[in-house]
Amino acid sequence: MAWDVVVIGGGIAGVSVACELAASRSVLLVEAEPMLAAHTTGRSAAIFAPTYGGPAVRALTAASLARFDAALLSPRPLLWVGTVGEAIAAGAREITVAQACELCPTLRPEAVRAAALDEGTRDVDAMGLHQGYVRGLKAAGGEVRKCARVTGLTRDGTGWRVSLGTEEIQTGLVVDAAGAWADRVAALAGVPTIGLRPLRRTVAIAVGGPVDPSWPLVVDGGDRFYFRPEGPGVLVSPVDETPSEPMDAKPDELDVALAMQRVNEVTTLALRSVRTAWAGLRSFVDDRAPVVGEVPGHPGFAYFAGQGGYGIQLAPALAAAGAAIILGDPVPADIAITADEIAPARLFAG
Image 1 (cartoon, one colour):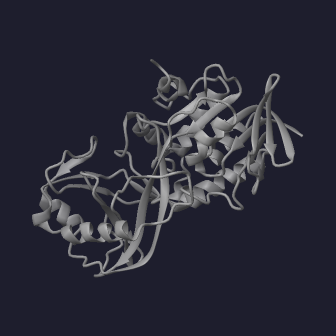
Image 2 (cartoon, helix red, strand yellow):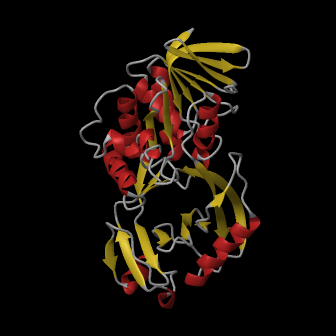
Image 3 (tube, helix red, strand yellow):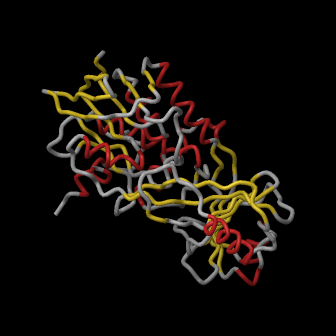
């Protein structure tokens, strides 16, 4: 069977853009693993943070809020803290150290030099979001195939031939939404790569002193740690960005210990043991904005990649904008970006 579009990758990027494209095209989504969201999506810290990321990311995040199913979001303020005098995130409201400690009493006042509050932050049901897109894709007539590794991509007349082992699929449009593997997929197709850099991020659930579930997400302005309540424990990260090959990332014990140490230095939590830990790959290009659209000179092959650590929070707007860009339609008016800002061509200029 021929499909209008073949989307490669079953994480949040792939399922969201596939769902949007399926409104007007026949869509097949293929995933190499035996389950969808097997890597970064399933390991996300799952936060909607309007003050997190660069200009394009913040614009896409802002436009995503009204597009989220409200049932997938629950309020949790983001408290930015400066521990060595860092600048606080743009868009957050500056507050006093005393106010910060009132919001999160476990903070040590002597360890905080500046603070700011983003009250627009929410927890996100990341897997609920992902599964909603899968249901939407299937309801529109799309198909999902797991254990379907792409072994070949060949330009064939006006379209592409996608090899899945011994099976070949004809399509007019390939969308490369393969996350950390996106450059490998492009190379398989003979398409210029975008310099995607997978970076490992470690997260753990640690336990120590009492935890109040109403505490905010606390993020260090110098990118040394973040933490938030998670059940009876605390979700912590050292905000590591360790270069990696595309792989099933595993947590490093030293990174877990570093996260606990950094959080203990600025709080009274006395974290002393780890309940569980995991790692995911956040994949960026040099300017840390997403990469969406066709590569000049390679019609019918489009990237939908480079979401980095923002894939959950900007998914609704990026999928809507991405589907429009890929199909040659205008970006929806409520999304304050242009196609050029996230086009692959910007990475090849000069």
